[in-house]
Length: 491
Image 1 (cartoon, helix red, strand yellow):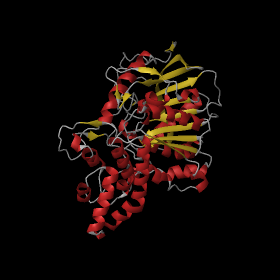
Image 2 (cartoon, rainbow, N blue to C red):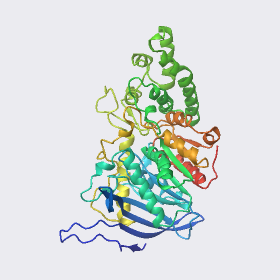
Image 3 (tube, rainbow, N blue to C red):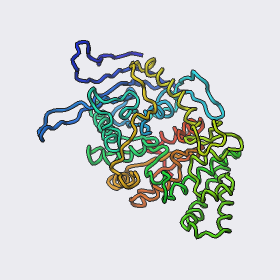
Image 4 (cartoon, rainbow, N blue to C red):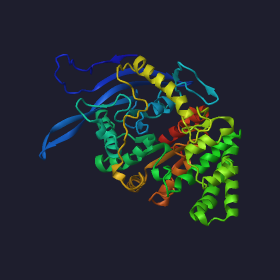
């Protein structure tokens, strides 16, 4: 491994406030597979992002606003025909570590799975399924996540919101393309969770603001319309679209195999649209016999007691489901991944107390990245690497005052403007943070021609929100996304 430390921070011993500068380190690596070898360089560190500054409508220069932490992987021997994938996670408040060390990067964390848990101090290994074999990778940490911070004297809160967050990431992409002379490369966005909200919004923003046409968008555990997943009074969409995930979860904990889980999901889908949604619409007009029949059918699908379902007026909020499903076993189920369980402190808890799946993955990813960034990428900082932080809260959605947050208009506009733009969407059956049925509903209602909608690639995995935690799903999904980037995938 070789190291370039030319861009070191200036000495601040004089007490003068220096202009912020890029702080990037380049290291060289080799990844070896069974019959292939890949040489690549990693460029790790912070990029200073400037904004044009006006005083009294007069241009007064560029003002540094943020120092954004970026990790770039560039294969040696490539040219401008090689695709570039810009990736980020969500939260809001999440760094890119999950996609970085879970799915895309050349190294991955050894976190284990629900039936094969790993214990501290955890570990790292080569990721021979890395997307770097087929595309260069740029992992971006939004404001206040990872090592990204505002400049001295800046206001990070300015970027803790829908539009300014999107614009900052878009500016990183624009600058990166120029510095690396990759404007003529195929370009992809990849987001997970709220990162899919950001990616869908970015698709429209990059076209209209920067003239950057994308070749594809990779959406993993997507949330494109918050109205489909936020439980609010008078909104029945979340109850309808969580139900297939409840059914999958119940089937899993009943010990059923994947094929049987998928059969249960199909029955739940039909029930949700053909029986459940009309029944919720009827409300108090349901007869006693109809209520009893509805509760019985729901019980068979989602594993809760019919009396509990009927007392809840057939509307089961997800945190209640996590606490109720395995109450007789003294366990809560997970939210990010409902396969995981944990004993609650209060066995009579009304709602889930702690997400066991979050606890399972948070520790190994934290340990792995903090070791990796120093020992292998040679980037050193005493700042806290914010894996998943609440410091970005409250997150501003002022653009959506009085209505649900949605990116459907922007994504639809991008697809109409660029009909050859390809979309991949990856779903986890056991993801109760962004349930698959909710995203299916949104994709089925985009304002685009049928021939455009029909080209959206949908892939399903017997996994949770972080699909790659499940080893078989990680391998299959890696191949699916590689095929998508190479233009080989389809329905």
